[in-house]
Image 1 (cartoon, rainbow, N blue to C red):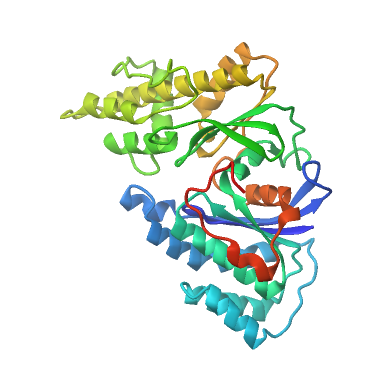
Image 2 (image 1 turned 180 degrees about the vertical axis):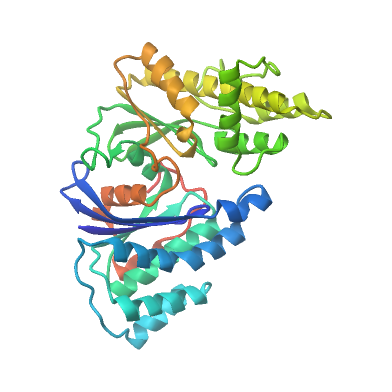
Length: 393
């Protein structure tokens, strides 16, 4: 099976072409083409992602990325060059009526490259920024009609879970994990603990009550004058403070550490940072110390709640995913402190390049639901869902 996967949930446009052999979850995945365009430099001046601008950039870059992955995919069947019927052209224009320039690009692509021999299109339809999501969703619908290929709408967070257990360097397969499993999903928009009793079986057992952890990182970074995206900058300064053994800047609270449940809260921690720096001009060393104090507090509560979840449900596997899982300090802490307490639990973090948003993870999650793919005539039910829950299909 050849899968074209599309990801446009936030500020990265990503497309992949993946060849699968076998059935989920024991299939092998050969990445034939994989391209990603990041908008970070564009959004820096806003201090965060500007949705309307993200949508525009997705519509501008998605066809050029499609050209790239087709060109770099050597092990790929021949395209079918054919003229687009007036009815199909009208239907595609209707789907892409909010992005007319995208329709023009797609028709030009078809004229040059023809209908590709794709078996399945997988696309993120939530959660995320709805204006950004709609670009990917509508592009997938248009391709589906143009190429007569079924579509699977994918939950972005399921993609992060599967990306964490995918090993493209070793055997191109998902790890054969043991259940029950706990997944800690940490990103700019999510902080969740998910119980998995089997493949595709998700139960949310803990979540943030306010800010997501990645959002808190970015907001604290902004408070102390660090550029966007703030998370990596906070971690960089925190690492420097640990290396130099800088003194504590402030004793920060660790919210909900002993709340007796599996929920999180980061707004109070963020407020404590604001009070600590109010009407002060911080030196570079003080910024580094504060960054470390903040990262320590966040990591402490993530570790404690995750450990509690594993104990409460007798989990045999821990899967950590999402953009914040790229933090070296969080990974090192889990690899040492968590495994010391839970030596019989297997811990998975995503391989480099798979922690942040990408389209390989959308191919994996789409393949998991290939049997429920929608035919081209039935894709009108696919909607962009900004708040889509992992526990819903």
